[in-house]
Image 1 (cartoon, rainbow, N blue to C red):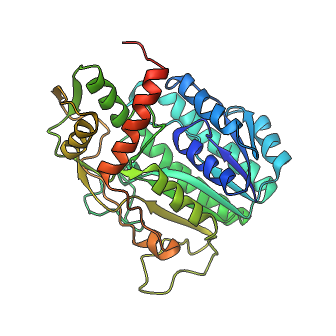
Image 2 (cartoon, rainbow, N blue to C red; image 1 turned 180 degrees about the horizontal axis):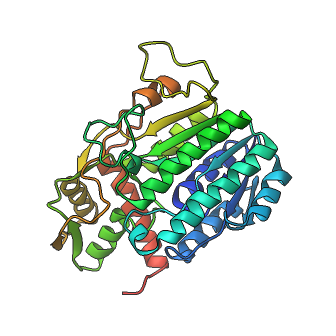
Length: 341
């Protein structure tokens, strides 16, 4: 099959593109290599992908509508996977314009390209952050998501809504995937795992916001990619929900559109997460305790019943195993690409 994947210089996009190419598919990867975090890490991911037959790199920003449209049109892919976005809850307090530009304008441009090329399936990345102020645990796809508490979450909620309208108006079969705190090798340096590992390795303090009792549904990247690979073949059809009682189905009543949680189905306290990093590195963390940051939700916990019903799969990697794999990669990468102190 032919795939068009946005964000292949990114953490998740790199892993998905590699999986697809290794499975014999042709992948065109589209990425603007922005400087939100170290572009050297992005270039290193792309360098690995470019060694694989079947991967084609296209550089470009989502905001460049003509270039993006031409790239999608030249490929006329069977499947589009839209992963590129301006990520990060806290950075949305510093640079809100980038979220509106990349996530709203950029996704609109991608949807216009999909409208013109009519892929068999469009998969769009969203986030557990859309659950916002929801106090019901675990988070289910049919829960209300009307109360986002960060601009990042608000833009992703908007992406979901816009993709639904395109699915309805233009018959684009669309699956929205809500990711829950993805971690693993080649992860982003702005995320807690990378920051904590780097600080512990350099014997500098880590910043812990709140008491450390907040929980996250940590999802190992290989598990996430496996779930996505399985969802590719589960194309939503309007008017054909799952069998009643099998799982809470979030299929739209008017469009070939569905939203699916991808998480581990386990809520891990931050303190336990830090403990696993300490164990993997063989060193204790020095902590600085700070107030909870604006925009952070207290807990995330995915109901993965729908994912299991659709794909027969639920992420299963233990947090100790996943962090061990990350640390092994991190120590190797850090020794070859030292970052400034």
